[in-house]
Length: 635
Image (tube, rainbow, N blue to C red; front, side, top):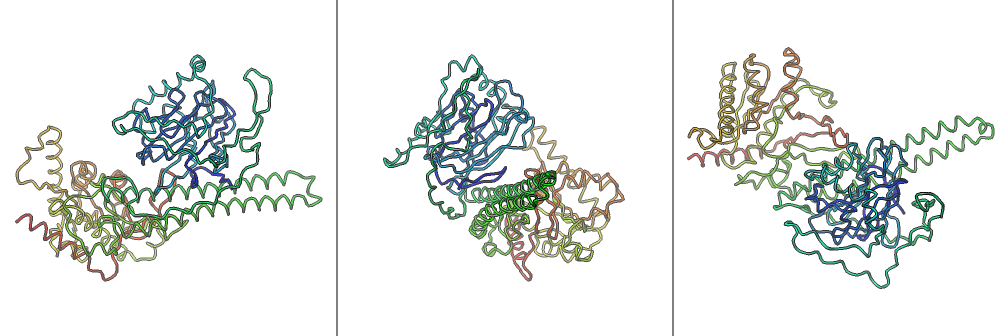
C-alpha cells in the first residue's frame, strides 16, 4: 500500500535501490545533495545536477523537464552520507511555484512498486525547494516529505545546505541548463541499474566506492514508464497520463520489514558520549517531525471536511432526495479514515522512539543521566569536560510518557533562569507561593550540582547570593559539603560579589582582545564561574542591577555564567528596564510547563525539571566528591 505523505511525515524504505519520479507540469531542474548526519553538504562536488549528473549511488537527469526520474542506490552512497535530499528548481521563465500546479514526487522500488508519494502543496513565491529527504536512522533508511521552499531560489537553497559561495554554484548550475547548453546535454531517463559509482576525489573520501552487487537473475524488471499520449505543439509530445497511474498491473508489494532494533550509541561521533549526544538529538528531531506531520494531517482532514460540508450545503437540488445526508456521511468517513491513517503512522513512529528511549536512557553517562540513574552511584570526578549536561526532560502531548533528555551544550552560551513565579502553569497554581519558591531554589541547586559534577576538579566555581538568608536550607548541600562558599548576605555582600565578577569579566575581555591571555595575574582563578542569585531584587540597588545585566550579557563569553532564581513580577517596579535581562536567559521552571517554544516546527514543548528522588542522598554524595577533588588539587 502506497503511503501518501504530508509535510514532515516519514516512512520506512523497504528497498535500497529506488527510483524517484517527479511530475511538475512545468520544466524544472532536478538534483540531489549528499549530506552528513546534520544535513550539511561537504562541498559542491556532493551536489548532483545536470552539469554533474552522477554521484556515488545517485543519478539525476541531464536537463530540465516537466517529468523526471532519479535513480538512487542507497547501498552505494559513501558511509559518511546520512541524507540524500532531492532538489527542484524552476527554469524556463517561471518565477514561482505558487503560480503552477503542485509538484508531485513518488518513491518506487526497482520493480516499479510505489512506496511513498507526496504532493507538495502550500507553495507561493518559492522558486526552489527540497522535495524529499532520504535519511539513515539506526542503520535503516527512511523517506521524509520536506516541501521546504526558498524565495531566494537555488542560491538560497544551496546556502541552507551549508555550502560556501552558493551564488556562484547556483549560477554554474543554471548556466548548464540555458537553451544553448541544453543542446549539448542529451536528455536521458536513468534507470536504477545504470547508477554510476565513481566517487568524487576529495580529501574526506579518497578511496573509490565499490559498485553494488548485480541484481539477482530472477529479479523482476523495472516497470516501464506509462506510454504518453501523442499530441501536437511546439513543446513536443504531451503526456496526459496521471503520474501515479501505471499502464501495467502493479506487483504485490513485499512484506514490510520489521523496524530495526534500537541500539544505544547508534549515531555518528568520535566517542560514545558524542554518539549518545547525537542520538538523543536525533530522537528529538524525529519526535518533532512525526508530531508535526500528524498535526498537519489532522488539520488537512479538518479543512477538507469543512470544504466538502460547505459544498453539500450549496447543492440545493440534492436536499429533497437525501443526497446531502449521504454526501456529508461520506465526507465524515473520509475525514475519519485520514485521521486514523495518520494516527497509525504516529503510533508506529512513537513506538519506535519509545523502544529507542528504553535502550538509550540506561546507557547515558553521568552528565546526560537522570538523578535516579544508577550511574550516579559510581560517579567519579571527570578528567575532562563533557559535550553537554542534562537540564531536564521534554515531551509533547501526543505521548506524555515519551521524554527526551534536554541536553545543553557546554560551555553555556547563555545564563539560566529558574522562574519562581506562577506564570501560566496549572501545576504552579496548585502550590502556595512559599512552596513554589522553595521548589525553584531546589531546582537551581540541582542544576548547579550537575554543572559542578560535569567539570574536572577545580574547573567550576559557584558563588551564592542570598541577601535575606531565605534560601539557607535549600543551599545547605552546596555550603555544607564545601562545594561552594557561604552565600553573600545583605546589600554590601551583593555589591562585593558583583564587583568581583564584573572586574573579572573586564580583565579577561581586555586580555583576549589584546592577545595577552598569558599575562593574566598569577593568582587568578581560571575556573569557570557560576553566580546563583536568589531572592532578586531584594538587596539590589540600581548599580547592582546594572552590573547584573552586564554579567548576563558579557559574562558567558569569558566563562562567567548567571543562574537566576526569581519571579519576574517581583521586579515589576523596574518596568521594561529588565526585559533584556529576562530575554537573555534560558527560562526553566520548577514544575512541568509547556513554555519552551520550538521555532523549527512550531511546537510548544513541555519541560520537566530534574528533581531528585524523595529521600535520595546522591546530591550530597556527588558534591562531597567534587569538594574533595577540588581541595586535593589545591593542596
